[in-house]
Every structure is written in structure tokens, then in C-alpha cells.
Length: 417
Ligand SMILES: *Cc1c(COP(=O)(O)O)cnc(C)c1O
Image 1 (tube, helix red, strand yellow):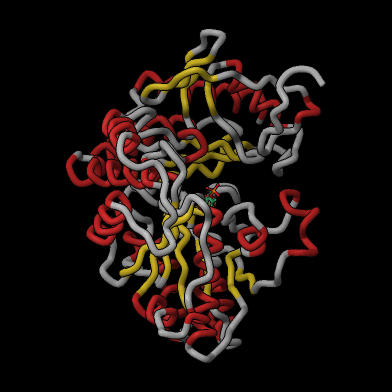
Image 2 (cartoon, helix red, strand yellow):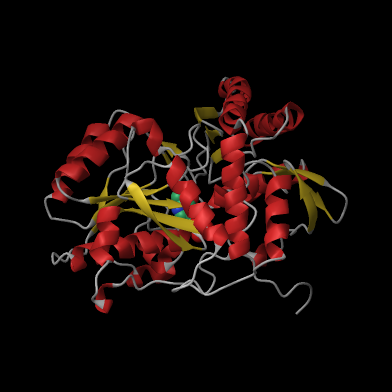
């Protein structure tokens, strides 16, 4: 063995692609050991909202490190978790009354699915079937993969994934077919529908309108099917509002939040649930308790970081920054959209995406590594999904950095489309 012993995620080590060593970061920039300044155009995989090393979040972690590092959370509690839970309820819809902690988006989804099945069992009407939207992504653990799209990502594990009911993606002009399919599937008394609200992220930055989300929620409620909103990517201002559900006037029964929960500084996730779901588990019968935990559930330093993120949301004009970023990206996207080889340009909140017109699509296409290299050579962190190039920067990014990103995408259209 030569070089590093590290096995990286979503990395084909056999291709020998360079793996930059990052030494520090600030705002929208990453700095490497070989002296480069890299623009973080995808918020370090969709997590960094306010920018790297936000001073308030860093200070909160440092301060908490002087008091309490870690404590079992089964039957114990601590102030950062209590403060965070109260703060979350204060800014989210009142129908979400309970906060369950975990440590990643995938686990927050596992928790949501277990809550839904536990609810139906505990009220004496067991249900097991879950409904999903075509092309969805909800994480990489077995349960999260089961409710996500099948493909190259999970071929080896497919025999282990459980069956779900899949409704078609509500593509433009075909929304009614999605709603009709949901209506049909709901008659089989499924436990829940899980959705990525407004944007399917890893599935290719696929957008659908708010009224479809509203309608899906209405149909689920009418058929007594639980509605789970996976806001792991869309939460914390990404789509222009605190949550994407807000734009559709939708209040889910269960909501998953992670990625931007700590401003993107440290891992933490929450699954919020309605009182009815909590009540179904609350009993003097110990067999009905919610059987889920991980060692680091509600780690105090992570909770302190998230509480600082909430304070930033309360006290600083975060949504104005989001709106400004949206406007600044809109003009640049418009210029891109006019170029030959660029199609399907779209934007919502801080996220923009285009597709390159090419025969060579798909995640495993030969185009992907060439695009990656193109952006790497220009000191940009961009990670296209097949022929889809998207931008999702930290909210503090300046105009010069945005220009560099959009110039490089325009060049890519010229070279590869
Ligand atoms: C990233 C993501 C997840 C998984 O989160 P991890 O923290 O990577 O486990 C789940 N759902 C959605 C919508 C995501 O974008």
C-alpha cells in the first residue's frame, strides 16, 4: 500500500484522481495544503449555510466544550438539547410538537420510518407499506435506500431493500398522473408517504411546483396516510424559505432536518413528530417505547452549534441574504440559459441547475469525471450529477466568486455539450 489508507465515500480509487488536502476554510472558500483557494460552490455537499467557520457557531462549540462533551441521552438531558428543541418548535409549525435527535440525514429518515410504523402498530392497526416518489433520495442506510431510487448506487444491496409503492415524479405537465397514482396507492392503507419537498436533490435537482406538494399532503390526510417531509437538503433557507413545505402551506406529520441544522459545522439531525405519533408511543407499557438510539444522540457540542444556528436565524437577516443570493444567481443563470448546449435551466431559492445537452448522461457516464476535472482545474468545488450541473453556495458568497462559478459552467457548456 502506498499513500493514504483512507477509503473515501463516493470515490472510485481505481481512477487515481487527486484528492486535495484541505487545511482551512473561511466563508465560501476552502484552502488547500498546496496553496490553492477553492470556491465552495456546493456548500461542502449541501451543508454549509452561513459560510465556513461562522464565528457564532464556532464560539458556541468552544464554549460548550468547556462544560459537557457527551452524555447518554436515554433518560438524561442537557441544556443545549433543551434550548435547541424549544427553539425549533418556536420557528416550525405548531403541529410538530416533539423533537427526536440523531446524527445524520439518513438516520433521521430511518427514525421517521420507524416512528410511522410504530405509530400504526401501537394504535392497533399495523401497517407496513411505504410510498415514495420516483427518483427520490433519502440516504445511504438500508432503510433510507429502500425508500430511494434503485440504480447503480445500490445494485449490490437491492435484494435486501424492502418493497415500496412508487408514484411517478410529478414532471411538468404530468402532475395529475402523480396525484392519481397517489390516490390509488392510498387505498391500500399504506403507513406513510415520504417526500423531498419541491426539489429532488441527488436524483438530479428535479423541481416540482408547490401546488403538487399541497395536493399530495391533502390526499394523504384524506386517506389517513402519514406524511413525512424529508427536508434534509431543502431545510434552512435553501429553497428561499426556512423549509420548503412552508411554500406549499404544508405541515407534515413528521419532518427530517439535518445538513444545515448546525449551519453545516458538525453532524446532527432531528426528526420532528406530531403529538399523535408521540402519544401512540407514550404508555405505561414499556413494549411501546420508541426503540431507537445512537451513541451520540443529541451530542451537547452539536446541539450548542445548532442552538447558535437558531440564534443566527432569529437575530440576523438570513432570509434577506438568501433572497439576495437568489437574485444575484438569477441574472447569471439567465446568461447561461441562452447558451447553446444548455437546457432546462431552473432555480429555487439558493439553488440553480442546468442540464448539458449531451448523449452521455447518467451518473456513471464518461462525462462526469471530465466535468469534475474541468471544475477542479479552475479551483471550484462543483460536483455535477450526470449531465446536470447545479450550484448551491453558502449564503455569504460574493459576486466575484459567483462570476468565477458561472464563467466555468459556461466554458463547460462550450467544451462538453
Ligand atoms: C443528504 C440527504 C440525506 C442523507 O443525509 P446524510 O446526512 O448524508 O445521511 C437524506 N435526505 C436528503 C433529501 C438528502 O439530501
